[in-house]
Image 1 (cartoon, chains in turn blue, orange):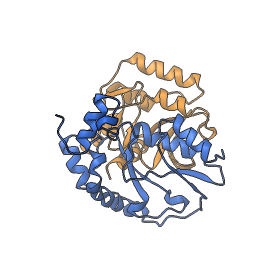
Image 2 (cartoon, rainbow over the protein chains, first blue to last red; image 1 turned 180 degrees about the vertical axis):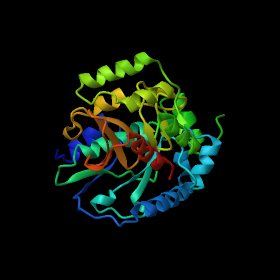
Image 3 (cartoon, rainbow over the protein chains, first blue to last red; image 1 turned 135 degrees about the horizontal axis):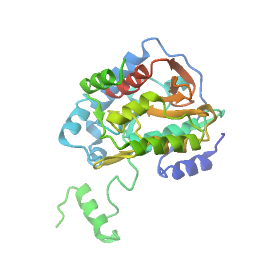
Length: 168
Length: 144
């Protein structure tokens, strides 16, 4: 199915990711090296080890202490977290950490699979391309404006938490 | 390989077995899959569901007959829900998706033959006569 920018955003919205940015991309058919899987394993660990600069997102991922340490040490991925390529390797994506992002397996990564599968016969595809290394839907990723602009107490508390202030 | 050998191997590798449901859940799942013209539950999944209602290993999972509660984490969807969502996909006609990881989906056809599918195009990448080999390949990617 050939989508356009609006229909792609609409489909993502239907899949519960209305704040997911997309990029238009023309897939190139590529062959993978015979050792791609070994390289992928190493790269995935390297990517996890770079997540130390994404603490603002990690704190909202409901990880326990062991999961958190294993994640940022690049040892293992906690249950229900997935590492995805922004541009898939088979479609010409680079084998480097800039081409990766982390998100929840369910519902997000699974639904992103569906979003891409539905476009697999199109000339141009729209690929999910979150701004940061970790995709969290906006309703999970922190508070609102805070202060006098906040519409409710929860937004105010979240703002205080995010800005490192107490909840006095 | 037998079901017990498979379970023993995967437990030793760190797979999490979700608590088993009851026989009715398996019967209901089978009926639902047949109603949506997916493949009926093969023998190996029926056997597996007697011991657990799904398995997870990192980002990889084998779906169970019912949705599995995972505490504060998002529940693991049932094999019914997964196949309802993809029931219109032509490349999955007469197949049932039973597992996934970050790179591949895994499906079984009406004859019990398992397939590794590309998670972007659903093209068949590998065909398995041994379903336990397919489930191992599915789960092992979750722990790399």
